[in-house]
Length: 104
Image (cartoon, rainbow, N blue to C red; front, side, top):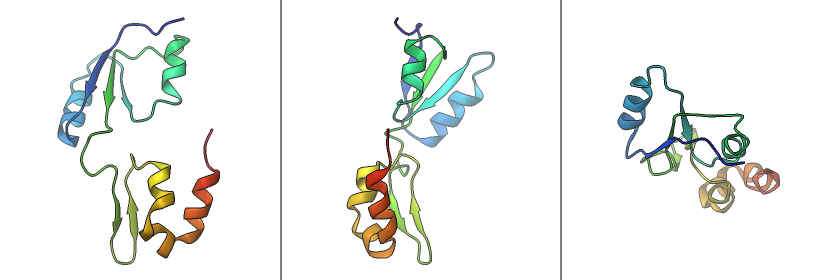
């Protein structure tokens, strides 16, 4: 089965994501970054969003950042980036090892 028709937008920044969500009205709009859960549901027509908003290119969402007493990992950061990060392996070695065992 194929997914029902939908609009696809590759958002350029967080302002665009927020605007698209705010303008949704009665439409169902979903944010997508990887799609491992949503895309199969769409293929079976168990999910039928009117629009997918791709956030993969939104600046700042794929960063691993040292904030002194914290390490911030952006929501779009790939597991492989966490696994290979010198910052993570140096400060959070257990996370660097554990992330290798996470996934479908």
